[in-house]
Image (cartoon, rainbow, N blue to C red):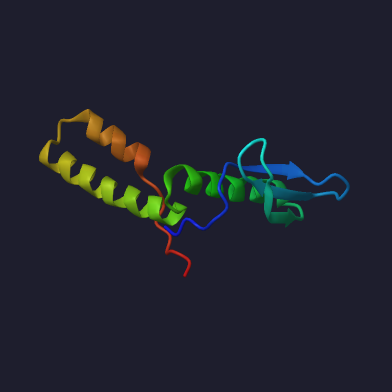
Length: 108
């Protein structure tokens, strides 16, 4: 991943005066922070938290959420293969159930 994105963690703050407006700020605690997104409207708060979480995860892992989802699918496929080879292993079935996610086409 290109690491030119704003370093995290990313946090959500409610706008001081505007109703239903949230901003997402990024940067280490105690340092100058950068506003990286502004969300408004009835879904502003959950959208702002989703944006902040994506930025924080990218900062923590060095990978985009898309890269992590792709890796999750690859690991899930490997566990599914292991479950076929070891059908009585409950741990594999539990891991598959926990990791199963809907399949969406990536936005390009």
